[in-house]
Amino acid sequence: MDSVELDDDGTDHWDVDVVTADDDREHELKVDATSGTVREDKGDDDGDDADDRAGVRAASVDAREAAEAALKAHPNATVTSVDFDEDDASRWEVELRDTDREREVTVDARTASVADESADD
Image (cartoon, rainbow, N blue to C red; front, side, top):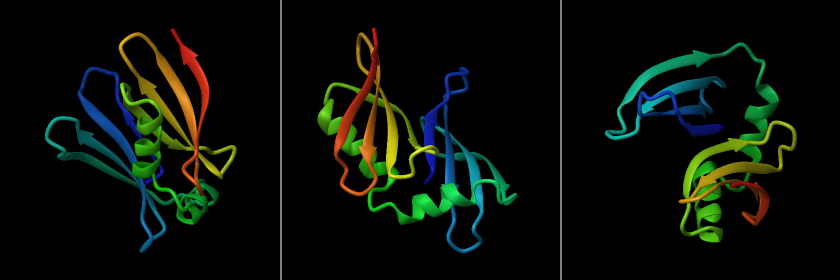
């Protein structure tokens, strides 16, 4: 998985980008936030994201583990987005929301160590 983000356009779904090993394509999925049903699957094989796909495959920590590490560091928060950092292929960017603010943390793609980046009140 390259990224997952809770869409805020009112359609109650997650936008999920998945990298497949068998055909080296990225699939852009819309997943119902309630049922988990895939609503749409757009395959993308234009090759523009080849470096990103290689970085995701090389990471020891996957998106789920990055989200879990962020929640362990901020247990009262909810994950709203997990993205593999396009600029620094050694980390995940995780956006969190709790009752009074949003924050972004980075999670090392090798060790799962968490560093706070920003907080918006």
